[in-house]
Length: 459
View 1: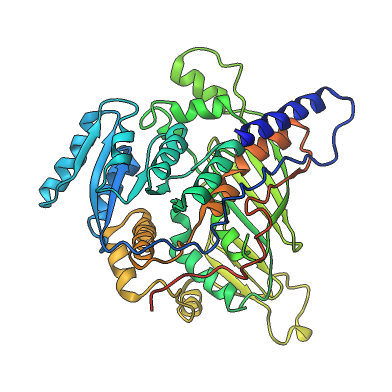
View 2: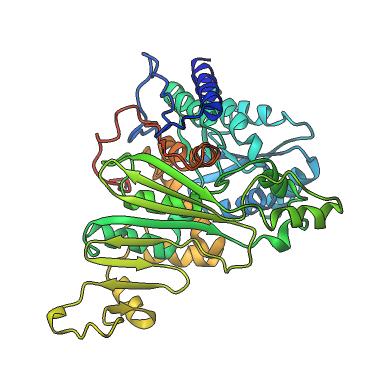
């Protein structure tokens, strides 16, 4: 209740500021105090679960593929499935039955998920619903003693981020964002190289979600995602590009996000998509075709992220790391560049003199820095099972492995809040003329207690 009051007060102050002739130089949002009975969840480890019973809520594209992947993950079983459309839930049950497995079925009503969250056979609620139901399901699950893993974007508002943080801290339940791009092979290797100092100190990073969704607006989402862009402004899908670079920069593990500035284009293509889909003119489309967000950290690092689902430029998550002694970039061509030796004798008329690793030379370089979680056996199994090239499977495998062994998860509730809050913070900046906005410290002062991102392993 206190969180809602503080956020409402902040909204009223912002509204008042918009009417004022003076624009604030920096917008500061309240950080609600932690309740005296709560402690932070940094490096939190729950009791080990030998065989994790997983309840999957939402059996659309992501949920149905999760049912299939999880049957290959050791140390877990699908204990229950739920969807508001019972036929979808039944398809999940039928798939499991075809493999000699069984699970409880819930569905038919919007709040059928509550019965799944109360099921004693469920240890982890794996949430793959539409975006607006992510948080209600997660909160109810944690209140009923379940760990939760939430598809992206896990939360759309600051209030939702704080609710997830506070509920996770109070119930001592894991609340993980299902950010699969943190487990893609290039990102895993570049993270290891950065941690071993190959690029020097990382001082700037870039990420994006640039994905032309023209073919999908009607075919797969029945326009609900297009409607979301029509009704909201800001970076609505930040975590694919943002999450992996936050890990490299040790966000809330020795550094933290401090300030954000956003800028966008007008909505050029969005109204056209609505008009093509509905046959009616669209004059109220809110989101720009391209949104750019810049962030600064407490230790003087910078981040640029982009969101573009409206233009026909090629798919890209950018993923660029700029270090004092090297560079890594994934799109449009995978390449790395290290500070050359003998630079004093270089002809500086030759603008491309740097030693750039691409193709075979890049693969040879990257082979020296295998990520510690990526054993040859796991990599082979991930590529066999699939899911965005295998990164979905690695994500599921690591989640279950950590729960089996009572270890801290790779991504905690603060990662979720930091990566997802970009949506509302970018909107606040945009609606106030691209004014800087302070990024709340969701750890409430604990961000510097742990030094460096790392994976946990059983002994």
